[in-house]
Image (tube, rainbow, N blue to C red; front, side, top):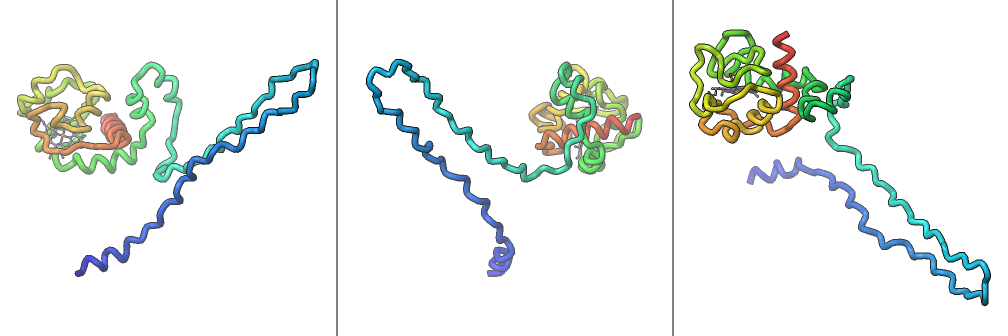
Amino acid sequence: MAYLDQLDGDTYEMAAPEAMEEEAAAEPAEAETEMAAAEENVAEEVTAEEPAVAEVDPAPEAEAAAEEPAAEEAAAEASGFVAMVASADVANGEKVYKKCKACHALEDGQNRVGPHLFNVVDRDIASVDGFKYSDGLAAIDGNWTADQLSAFLTKPKDFAPGTKMSFAGLRKEEDRAAVIAYIQSAAQ
Ligand code: HEC
């Protein structure tokens, strides 16, 4: 029964239940006072709709305050993800990269379990000399745009069935953007 001990530690406070939908406040009864032959029939009672009080829901996991450099203009043209990479937190990307390190070096020519990732952004897919790629990855045309990398890193086996990259994937888009930003910065 040792698990009971663990349960004791897990006291989370329940979040305050959201206010139930409140019935709209009683509408002001339309004036029934039919003033006989009121000349100015001011029928236009502006029923003031009470603006719903926006309950500011403080984002619980607002981690690092997103720094937004002047990437916004570029964002108009580029994909949203490219803009995310441009404004990503490189230091966070370095942390995320720890998951890649066992298999990938960032130095040109240093292949390990996986091919080196020097300058991988915009590199041809499966093009490192001397690295033996799976047929699955080798079959994919094109180059590693940020969007392609993001798709691959989300779930390698979905993007490239048969890939030999044994990595489940990076579920969070911000992690993918950050690691790509880091890989990019390491090549400069
Ligand atoms: C367990 C080892 C392993 C881990 C962990 C791993 N990879 Fe890979 N990666 C590989 C292998 C092996 C390949 C070659 C895949 C193939 O040929 O199908 C590869 C291929 C790639 C490619 C394609 C490169 C090219 O030349 O086309 C990219 C990009 C890549 N990995 C990025 C990453 C990133 C970023 C991470 C961490 C978030 C990561 N990998 C984690 C083993 C790994």
